[in-house]
Image 1: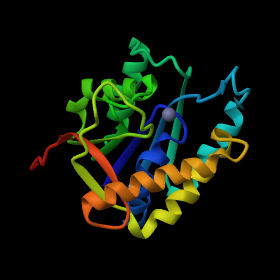
Image 2: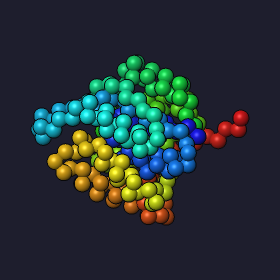
Image 3: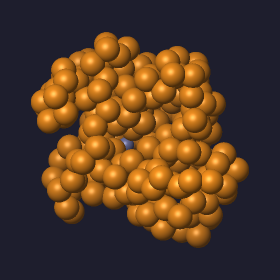
Image 4: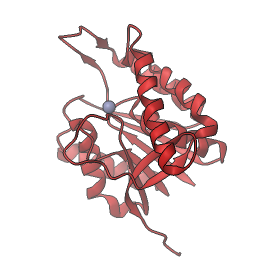
Length: 212
Ligand SMILES: [Zn+2]
């Protein structure tokens, strides 16, 4: 199986579907990570600065752990506004890779970059038979995300936390600990719904079984 995991920012993928990707890796599936923005930013309030070179190195390390290929499209962060070049890039990447399954940000995620990925994916849903949307910021969005698909990640949850911690630049000054705590709560909550210890939850954008 060929799996394409799409994220607006470096680390979205690992938070939203990192455990599922570890399961895919263990099953011998082919995996590609597609990060849409450079993810570089400077926050004038917290003074946090995230440099592209550091982020890219972290993406490379995560790719190695997942035995995945990777691509960073380099669009400007906080500026995914569905331009023609952004939409065409998504189309081109899907047509080139021909995935059997896509994981992507949810259209109902509260972060505008995240929901932009969901909107672009909805436009090109005809290009893949199976598309699952994940949430990686849990603030209130336009619509509550309707989780209706679960992957059991109980046996790989610890590995998922290590994968996320590779992105040290995303939450400097000890902030990574609170991220991990939040993700543990969310994955436990989805686990209760799914009937296991830890699960990742998704909203099905498309699930078509096509007989060739
Ligand atoms: Zn993000």
